[in-house]
Length: 325
Image 1 (cartoon, rainbow, N blue to C red):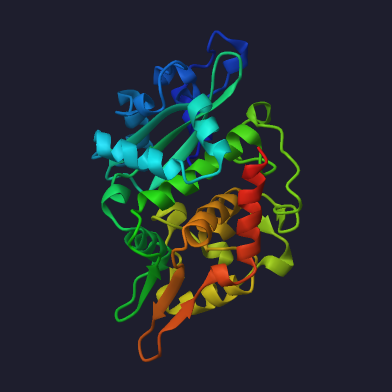
Image 2: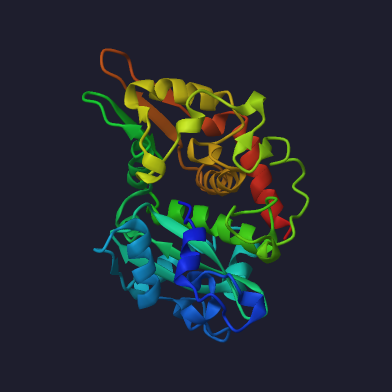
């Protein structure tokens, strides 16, 4: 999940909402923006993005070309099919708490999940996905994501093999659904630095999954840190990319000695949970490969398989946490 900076969005909200429980809540975090009906089926909540939300995304990302994408019945069915591959808690949270699920053509990255509250302060979420994930294979989506982390260099490349059996939607949905579960159930201590504490779900015991790896939200304990971790960015956010492709080996070698399953997962404990969930399903439950290959100029190719290291145990633990909900 690429992080939306919600604090600047306070400028988009009225100074006073008329409801003390919503004072200071950004416009996009208010349930009334979404025409949410609890009686509507989840399938009916997969539709066109509200025009006002699309305007906000265009302004946030400086992408006036963002366009709503209407998913076909077959694409909706595929999304629901992939959701059913996740532990039952995910389906329940989507049915009870998803205020809307949308696709935006040309979206930066593959998805974003945002917290939403109603007038009584009850938590919900919305999800926006890039329809490119409906067209690409899982390997294509993962390769595109990974390459956005590095400054391109001629004759060198990073490629991710995650198989071709599943669409990139599997990764986008698994990752974003983990954030949704985290918002609603409090799997990690908290999901979003910009989310006011009064709207955070109470954190559940994690069995040490995150508290043993992370000193704070985006700072792992020194024993888990590694070269270039503090320079990791994706999709051009945060002023990136900041890591030269010629330095990719150092980054992945550091990752291999850490408890994290991906560079993306090494950014914060929220992303750690989302990535452990996604790869626990992709490589664990679904039996797909997860191999990162570096093709470097003048050197033999080198491959890394993070799910064959310590991250595999943590990925299983992330799914086990969800199974208990």
